Length: 390
Image (cartoon, rainbow, N blue to C red; front, side, top):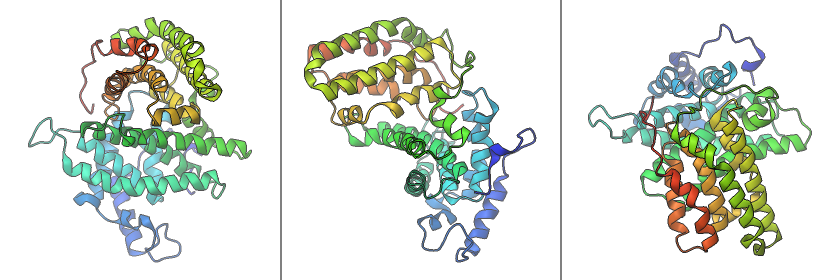
């Protein structure tokens, strides 16, 4: 990969101009049959050279560079984390059609959630159509990139891999928001697509580590942030006056103790493997919750997301079949997602998920229903007011 942004000083860097992205797109279109072109005429990415969904690529690129990146600036401390959205992704998009698709998808869905000038407060459906058109191509191609990386076919292309990994995670959450608005609940398989996308990134990282291949430092920070900061400093993004944060901070020992007590009591009859998977998920939830409540972290959302990325595969399988014990544990993780509900791509994922679980488990055993007291109570804690896109 020609662009290795993190190998260069950042003091004078600036994001590419949207006209450069559009001009690069046009030059590729003219030379798409060239053997040196990154997009061949038979490649699925060939459609990236068109204005999908009736929205010009240049309009989406401009919005990404001037507005979308600003919505990611509030939850970071270190410059390199902000630079990934502001500089790395646009720079890689100049030469990587897959990343360009992801960048345009993110811009389109961000525009979708901005108020329509004709109908204030209503999402712009034309941008959602453009996001879906770009997104279908991006998800297919980026997952292939992750698979190639996992199999060692291209371990040097870590700039584009890093860009794809972040875009996949955020877009998974953003499209899940649209699914919820269309009536999707946790009872529907589509409600778990974001989880598969997020875990796919972690799987690639694990495969590389197991194979003993070198991994770029920024990719490690991106996938396993809890491993990379031996000197953590207080993160000011958690508002101690936020009633939701105070509730989690004050109740965490109670719900963790209750989960463990039920694990060793009523859930012990589930069998060895299920009990092990539930126990691992609870222990990891305890670790993540403690780190957040101590406020010794670098990025709140990425710390929260280490839990779904690191839970055992067996626990994921239990979630997919709507096992009440697994859903009860998951509901307590959703309490952490309530802390980031002001992010436009997250929105009400925490509260909506908790309501779904309460409904699904309404006829579950008493041990499960009693554990849902803590998630249910956070539904009554006031939501912070914020614009959909700040």
